[in-house]
Image 1 (cartoon, rainbow, N blue to C red):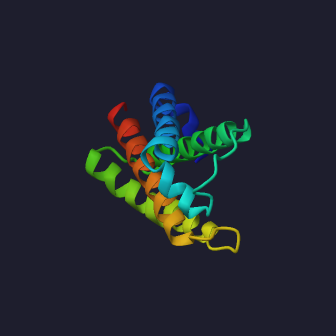
Image 2 (cartoon, helix red, strand yellow):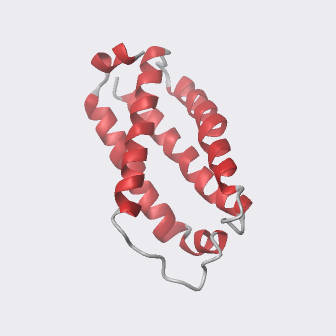
Length: 137
């Protein structure tokens, strides 16, 4: 599958990554800021703003975008309907399920809320990534 790297439209990968990453910034700081803090049990705090909280998600978004692009190419996903199916399978089957699994630990006081907020972000993100990559083939 790694051989698919040569077949990728790198502009679509870059665009999809940028939008996915920017969606995350908006998702957690603007759209769901209060709910996210509640899920962490830190609703009365100002969350720290360290480099790792920007660079880490950027790297993860890039890896998810690249892996998705490789799979879309290898599986020959051609239509937006197929991209939608792909995104739902990957989004729910891996991203949402893994996010909720990570949240279920003693350090996250509201794991289901956290899983819903973060999992929904990844589901919407992977839908956007899949649509961009398939549309720009």
